[in-house]
Amino acid sequence: MNCWLIKSEPETFSYEDLERDGITMWDGVRNYAARNNLRAMQVGDQALFYHSLSDKAIVGICTVAKAFYPDPTAEKGDWSVVDMVPLKRLNRALSLAEIKSDPKLQQLPLIRNSRLSVMPVSREEFDYILWLTETSL
DNA sequence: GCCAACGTTGGC
DNA sequence: GCCAACGTTGGC
Image (tube, rainbow, N blue to C red; front, side, top):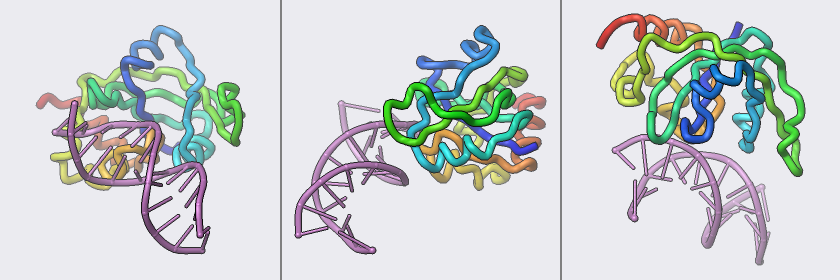
């Protein structure tokens, strides 16, 4: 299993929306690096769900339910989507500020390239983030 | 193929 | 609202 981090503006599509819908087609990716990451996802891979802009925090985990297929919302170009289902909400949100201040998380593309919307996360980082959110501040 | 100009994303 | 970072476009 590989681990990922996906970003969404909560005003557009939040983790709560994903829980309500039960499954979602992760569409609209229009960046080649992000698309290639989408295409590398396999069924069962887990992804951290990050709220950008107004929230700026990792709030939950979702699971890849269907591997990549053509993005039906793309009018032109070679774009892909995957299907995601919610797995669980984190005990507490992990804020960007906390991520930035943690020496163990400095390698996250979230910090190094704030504009990438789909990125790989190492197993160590993934497990560490889960452990962090099981503990209180 | 290079690079300047422009557009978009997202943090602050 | 501003600006930095990055990606894309288009002229040469």
